[in-house]
Image (cartoon, rainbow, N blue to C red; front, side):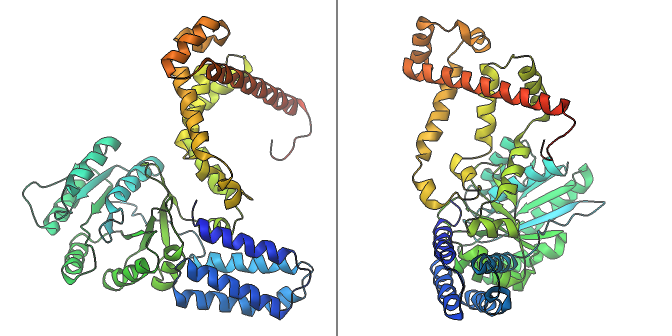
Length: 448
């Protein structure tokens, strides 16, 4: 879960706060002290914590909270607003040129995830902006770095520019941009070399590349698991290169929150994207207000909806609607729905976006078992013949035994899946009937 430790602490703080009626200055100071400790434990920069809690304290002891009919809610609202401001305020998207080539330069320390992030951004912008990307391999120092980018390019079907035998990244970057201009690419992503720590040679090389190619964006890739250390790195890169934004990676791991809550305040540059998993589709725009809500345990329904919509194939959705109308929904369609859910990410990552999905609740659920159940259902359906998938009613006892044997499951597992399919089909039929009746009605609910 993203910032699970911090999320849990804030939920406990707010839960205790809501039990109080009126809030006095002593109560506010005590709560503010708890917030300060929670942030420091999350490895948030001390200066950031000091300013954050000071601002909250000043706003909270005013009439805004003390004279409110619901002081606890008003205090939480202030924390949410200040957290959003700390994370950057408004959504900051990438800059694009109207004509010519967009050049994005990826920089950062070794191990932060620059190469994978370069592929993720190229894939995302090809889909969203209809751009034609070219990846340029400028990391000539790390063993297998160029090969890694080539493998990513093959997987994504995105061309990768390399220069075998060339050891100067400056030359490779310049030739890559020239190739893009000559061959009609409108997006170039330069994968530069990282180091284990900032050094003069690295920064001089990056500054030279910047002067040669004049990038549209200089994106600093920061490991979200490194806390305050990453803030110091970001500050140094910004001073020397004047970065345009930050990409925060590994937010699906044991991320404490220090980097995300400190980097914008320290550098003055906003986080533009976050990496949320290992899949090449696991990258999303960074919405400060949505992230603040998730950190404070309020959920993130809008990101959930965005993720769902991005994974829906409109043509398939229309075909499914027609099948539901004609009662032709079969196990092939059921399998397709399972695949779409898997593409959205892990069940845990989806549940944590919902309001009220606190850490205690998620810990009480066996996520591995839920993921395993999905994989098992997939194996069972794939062990069926095409006719059985289209006409589940023909699956008798002997067929169930054969399907169980072929999928490495039991007959009980097969029975459970078929029962679940019938229940899903029945539910979808009821939903279809409800939709029809709403269409016939003169009065429609605003969300129908």
